Length: 159
Image (tube, rainbow, N blue to C red; front, side, top):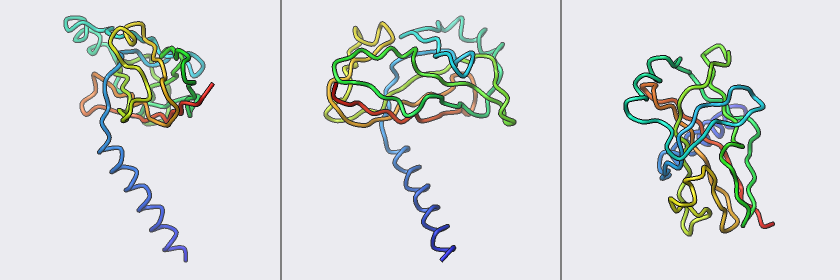
């Protein structure tokens, strides 16, 4: 009985990993992780220039994990969602919170779309949900090799 339960959990985690790998994500913003567990990410459509990114990466610590706070994220159809409301902290292997590190913020693509992702919409670091459903944000480090990533579950509901 215990073996069946363990195997079921193992299969479920493998299935989730396969789904995550098969999903398509599009970049919607660049950001620094949150300074505290209560403060949103510092985010913009394009935050890092190529010359600045080398300098920023040289100074940034390398996290072993990104830890989302305030999840799952809830959005409402027709209401702007500022990406600065997303809270993600960078942490080392012991769980110690690090200073903000550069990340890319991505959104899982769905058909038909759940979010209006036209460039004039996301240029202000916010998205507009257009229909109800579920999707995931993905945050991944820019400077780390290999990149560290985390998925954040999100739901769009009717107002």
